[in-house]
View 1 (cartoon, rainbow, N blue to C red):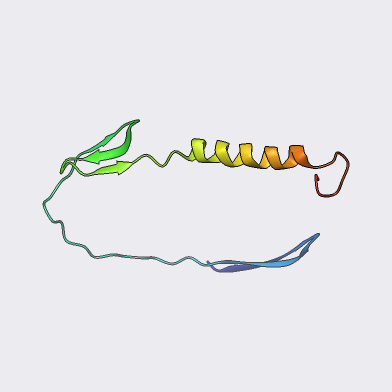
View 2 (cartoon, one colour):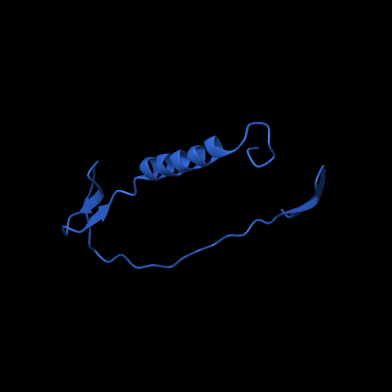
Length: 83
């Protein structure tokens, strides 16, 4: 079932397409299995001993927020630069 919708919003017109499509991927089993351990210090560790570091999104987001708040504090209240 295919379908096309035209949508009007405040900032313009949009077109949505809906298409049904069957996707098949032929793959052969390799017979190998791995184990994953999810933790706090490392994001995951697999059964081969490979570790992936934890991305720490919260810490980087807090640092950026702290930087932006310091910039805003230096601006004069009511100015367009502060907004």
